[in-house]
Image (cartoon, rainbow, N blue to C red; front, side):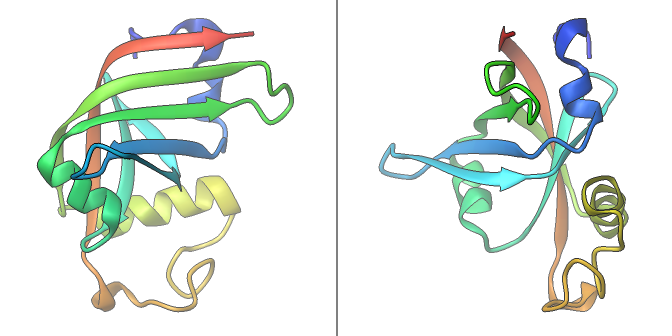
Length: 136
């Protein structure tokens, strides 16, 4: 995570909800809340096939992630990057790991009571960080 300033790495390590912004086909930005973690130099999030952000990423892999410190709203981390890798391998394990980080319980049958693992294909998205901006 060398592109992430040491002063703000904690926002990726703690369960801070992130706003992911993708670009709609007509150029309109589209934002959604996601859970994130890191792997090596990448920031990762997880989604299921068929969602709008997934459709947007298929056409344009550029993203922005904003993490706002819940203790100080004037302290934030913006990450601009490109999704460089997607995989279904480990997707269910990854969403389970994120669920424990963010809500302290399993995802399927815990936080998520409306879907089962066999109902959807989970995908891990890896973002190559191109630029960061910070405040606070």
